[in-house]
Length: 224
Image: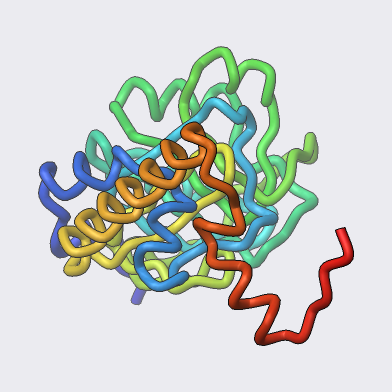
């Protein structure tokens, strides 16, 4: 039997807001270089950013009926995450469904298949990350589960996990790790800010990164 379920446990707004302050790359590094989705998944516009709970849906390749169900049942702020078998040759989402998402206040879409109408999607501003851009249409036939764990971009995505995406890519944070990851991300941002200020004061890369010791350990001879 196929089940359409809601997210069992949603992250708090405070946790989502805390993570939304950081880049996907910072979060990935801060949580031990974990959680990065495949770099093949790209935003249709580099200015697009998303951060919110994953509303997961499985879909057959070249079929978007379950995506339509997900749009109907998702709540404002949810990020719809579609596992469709990494099928590039289908445009399963476009301007019509984007307007449906915006009308409901959905926070964005991540899909491992294709999308289309990208010029309009850019104008609409709904954050959309996809595996491809493709004009080929889809059918509406095969039913599948909503809000079960799925694999997208090589990462397990559980309903309620937090997805963060920007121009550089996507990262997933487990719901129960959100507060810790936000703290670690802040610490990393603070450290990098200190590096930048040091560079502006004239401190060299050799000094900050302690490259003298590295060169000696590797037996490198500098003739410059």
